[in-house]
Length: 571
Image 1 (spheres, rainbow, N blue to C red):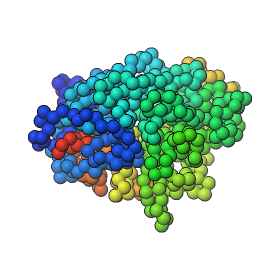
Image 2: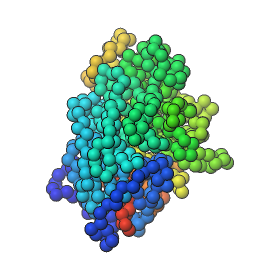
Image 3: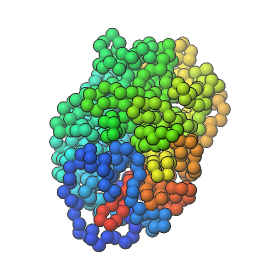
Image 4: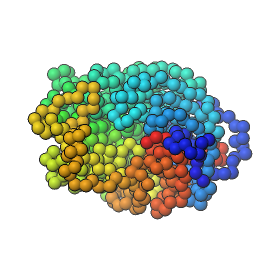
């Protein structure tokens, strides 16, 4: 049966829904959530099966749950346990956090809610009063927030207008607040990602490379909010002292006067902590403008754009980096979620990091030194043919050079995989990736095409690619674009084989959850929420939520009852 709100005819209503099997747990009747227990590194790492304590469930970001009450045999009976209307009509991407019977989530305007995870009843709501005017500086159509971090006795939320707020988990009262946008910029900084809390610190990046920003990630003391360190991802004006030594090396890979438009490289999504190696990994974004010829006169790799960077959480100094797309020319960010695991690679057990960034290659890196172990294509692509395993660099396809011939490119600017999290089942050795083949037409702006001079657009996005009527004119002269389609793929990172794939109803896709019950859950832009067999991809269950589902689902347990929760709303 479809999930319905009080008005079944209402489409695209924004709701948080929790599903469970029909038999309630009698022991839970009248139950009240427990007093929140402090959350520290050890508790996150131990990862109680019934909880969901961090963005990817734990530091290792597997988005895999050991719960198996809902399984292949029982999923057909999965039904609505409770629902809660959210009341916003912007995109909803929040991944709930669940601890001690309380579920925490955010809406598009960074409003944080704590609710009884068993009933959906409100415990408290904290509205940080995000400035609505900042929405005009969103790169992609409106405010976004992907969730909170839970640490100690507090909930940490980043606001779209670039503040970091600490909230008491028991009461919903503000403990402290800091402005993270204290680096000069013509255009306000924004934040879309969830904070990372570990080692007594809270880390946050920012978003909107397209808006003339310079990327950085900052660590704050979790107790006091004191700023401890900041790591800039791209160099600033080379006539000024470099903020840290890594930037001197990076500046050698840039040309022209890149700093006048910020450079980009924002850390707008992926961050995680490695308790084994005491390392923080961040993923960095695209450059400003997208077109490298305009951004960096004379070329260069433009470090540390589109890179995975390992940092010392105590000092903020870089341990190593790996650049997935040197000299990024396509908005191929490496800000996608990163999985930490152990694998037998070429006969040796290795601690590895897995990522499927926008550029269409799935990377397996040694997380001790950043060494490249595997790089297999997982999505449709025209821009490159392979990754050279000696140099670690992609081999670009000379016939697909949009600077010489404007054309449709795959992946497009939304990537073969964007921010929507994948799941990883270590037992099966499979990553379940939400992918899409969505082409984008690349051409230089008309003024640059005619004069070779790029005029920056003040208080507007600087993409360095064609827009408006000129873009439409160029498209008319181009070949027909490939169809835009979305897939859920079960992918083997070591062999590069796709075990199975299913085509989504929509090219707009949602994040993924995998469970020990042999299930993979995913929603999509059409509003359907589905469960697939982990081994075969067979569709076992689905429900119409009457609203686009791009947020990732989570699962948790209260008493003897397993719940599956997801947010549905606008796409």
